[in-house]
Image 1 (spheres, rainbow, N blue to C red):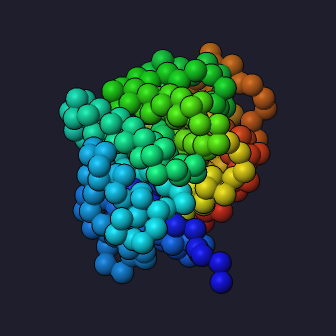
Image 2 (cartoon, rainbow, N blue to C red; image 1 turned 120 degrees about the vertical axis):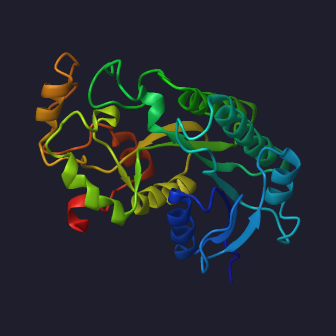
Length: 287
């Protein structure tokens, strides 16, 4: 019997992390999860507490000192997950060094398959300055508007250079939209009367189950080097058509192509093309 691929998942107790651990375990991966707090009882895989701001702990974790063998890949989701949850300095001090340590530890251990959680915020959220065009995609330079987003843009830059130093390394940075559990969808109808209520991220979201699918597909994708991918659901949080929303809220922003129905304005075309990403869960089906 072939040995299962061993994957270390950081941030395993977080909102997205719980979906990722379950999905990877169900998909046949040997999951080693880590966070500063334990996941819910009954979570699959093996869990250990680790402080990712300590490079030594990260090297120990990825090298499998307590697991018998090194990991084959790492999924790095751990972070203070949004602006405003901690001071700017604390957010930067936690997030950016942790990502450096994961990339450096992977380099030391010889892991060449890394998936990291970037963020939709690097696209220019909350779009107080309108985006350059719609739908937004990965083709324009990052536009961080907060310290949190600045950190994510720097983490992507680190990924580019680590892959430049090692041409066999793959780093996939997934720019996740606002993560939702099925229970969160009960709030969606309350947004329908105000098109500006969710303008801050172009009415985007990502179902945690589809976020987990994107992680698995990034792990299994056959490329080397650095690539960033916008990861959102294929629809918006609104019942109105996307062309109407864009015309009302961003009337002066160029629209690159005709918008179809309620399609996302956070373009997932690249993720579909390279990763084979295909969202399966839509909020209107979960009410």
